[in-house]
Image (cartoon, rainbow, N blue to C red; front, top):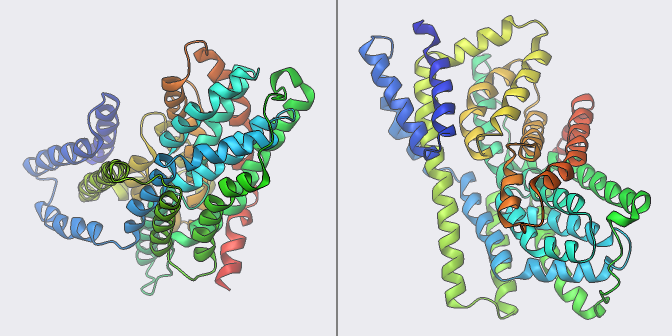
Amino acid sequence: MIELLPLLMFITICLVLMLGYPVAFSLAGVAMIFAGLGISLGHFDPSFLAALPNRIFGTINNITLLAVPLFVLMGVLLEKSQLAEELLSNMAALFGRRRGGLGISVIVVGMLLAASTGIVGATVVTMGLLSLPSMLKRGYDPALATGTICATGTLGQIIPPSIALVLLGDTLSSAYQQAQLDLGVFSPKTLSVGDLFIGALIPGLLLVSLYILYMGGMAILRPEKAPPASDLQAPPMGQLLRGFVPPVLLIVTVLGSILAGAATPTEAAGVGALGAALLALLRGRLSLARLAEVSRETMKVTCMVFMILIGAAVFSLVFRGFGGDELIHGAFTAMPGGVVAATALVMLVIFLLGFILDFIEITFVVVPIVGPILLAMGVDPIWLGIMIALNLQTSFLTPPFGFSLFYLRGVAPASVATSDIYRGVAPYIVLQITVLAILALWPGLATWLPALVRG
């Protein structure tokens, strides 16, 4: 029974989080309760807790994680300065007069917004407020409109530069080094956030292309669901370029500097934040009051991320102190089907946890536990990171618990039924699973480009 304490600890934290308690304090609190229980039973070495200050200092001192507040700042600046709204209105006016054109505009702008914010909730809410009323007003089927917005909102998980990929990259990097040390490799290879960014490009663009093909197919086969918006007038070319080129150029510069090896993700994030501030300033949309609002929002998200990270560090430390990693490793190696079955099981667990936990909690709690074991079994770290990101993206779309559905339900008008949202996301879930299957069959889609860029 004592040997099952780590499993009981994991089940307890899932139950506590389902009850709605704050994530960071739940992780640390449950871990300390179980540590106290283990010490009283003589089954936990208190010296494990002595490593906690060093872990927290290492987290705060991690230069890679400095990219998180900078990317958040970049995204919030683009959102609060209404640059994203201007981009959507120009794209809609340019393509909306064609069947399905408004829907395709929403997908493209949603992709760019996802790349700039990297936060699912922010993208879904922003796109829901900006584009849903416009689509419904022009006769789009409510299911198609809401499904498209939910699906494009989750692209922040996979389209770089993405906060989800920054956190996954940092966590998988530690897991990869630990796996190699466990195998006796004392000069381990490294994994960078930039590698994940590069690896996510082809799967991410493939997914966006399938979204656009689906919208185009609906416009041809069911034109009444995606009618042309005849009241929209194409904007002057100067206005279009002024609204489209600067934010796109900013995102391309940030990502291109990483791909070219000219900047680390943290340095590129700094460039992106500065560029977004300059864009807002040049448009006359960066007053002191707005800057204060942007700063507060950035600080709120950043504090949430780092508090969860510290809570997860406590949880991971106590879990390992109970021998939880050895318990999982033994279960995986004894499993029939080997590494394929173990990877499939992990993907299923992550998918189900995506119903109740955000990507930050899953990245900081689940990945450090299962990551070293899978990587020691020979799984490619870049492929694993992209699969986890896509898997979570699918989970966030899946009824009845998908986070993306809740976010849109909160801003959608009462005339849109919840069943419309569920019906609308179903085809996009199929597209997500299709990309997951393709990536599982051809891992080179995620690993080929990073290997090419590395030389």
